[in-house]
Length: 178
Figure 1 (cartoon, rainbow, N blue to C red):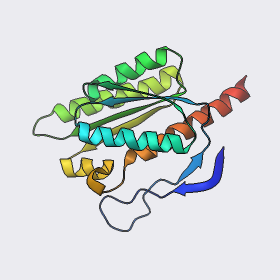
Figure 2: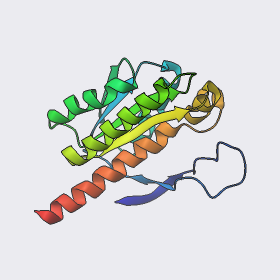
Figure 3: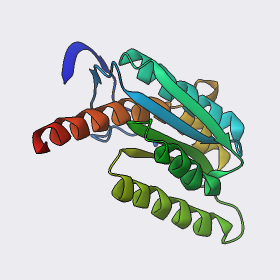
Figure 4: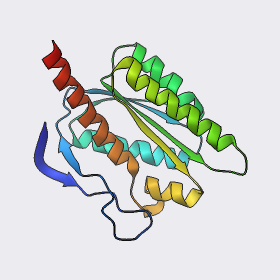
């Protein structure tokens, strides 16, 4: 259930123009939720900042049971998230990675595989698995979306709030179905 304590500001439009884009992020009470985070080590400056933002947001929602695991790259994230989900310990998972387009098709292949893998986990496990994979054209975009060096907004904060909101919604309807 949403509380009226405080509200996290909408993410600014990274293009800098005035916009209605952004996510309204109220603060939820996620006390008792068990949240896992799987983060890639590839592009670690960006991913570490995103993890820190997610953890900050989770703590602002009273979530204290947070387990973070790391894998080599974004391609490995769905399998690691699956391993965590198979334990039955987690109410939700945040998948964090950063893909930066280069000169080959590698970016497209990895993006598609990771996207499909994370969606499949959502549907197969019926547990919120948050898509926190940045797909960027260059390092500057990645830094802006991770709040690195004070640039832009840390999207990890959005994902932390989103996993709590999604877990609470899931619990609400599981309770009604019982």
